[in-house]
Length: 280
Image 1 (cartoon, rainbow, N blue to C red):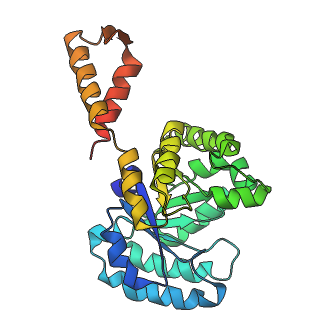
Image 2 (cartoon, helix red, strand yellow):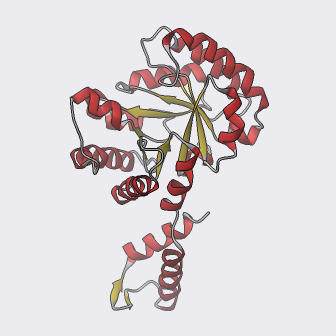
């Protein structure tokens, strides 16, 4: 698994039909970018977008390719086979892999992985009830790097009308985090915030995702990258706390002890270690 995908906090979508935006996206601070052949491209523009993507990829360095995914079209559409042929040609050049939309069956992930080769990393998007029902199978499929939540399509699929806090989606978010944990995957990636001009909403959505156990978030505008990276990185106070915990653990030789009036035992020590690992 490429480290960029496993540890990424921010994933910025860019229409594959807009190659003039590729360089800006790569320079946005996003840990990964997603060149989008699916929702961002109208049906009658799919072939042209694929050609534009093919013309734009040679301008990427190998390091940039390693933090780039391509969202292919869904299984059963007439465009996916050509998408896979293009991506397969780039896997040997360092392209990280594919985001798989409308993921509902592990067999589909097997087929995509086989078409792209063993080095391809897959990020299935859970966007429907069928995807939720199969989430454990999706998480355990070979080549899956992380799960991602397509919460807008999920609501559409079930006829939901969530409020700003999206309390109605709490069970689904928990299910993705739990499935990722059972499959020993990195923490999943939460969906987009559609209000691109509202930093407070972006921060609140990212903080909710982190509280649920997500490890990153999808972005649709470069301005969203900063708040996401900030939220999914430990703060200075969290780092200072973690250092104090580990210093105390060394002094007490791994035995439980009290810090600031609170007991510190093995789970707290593990949390401190994880906090320091998440520093950038």
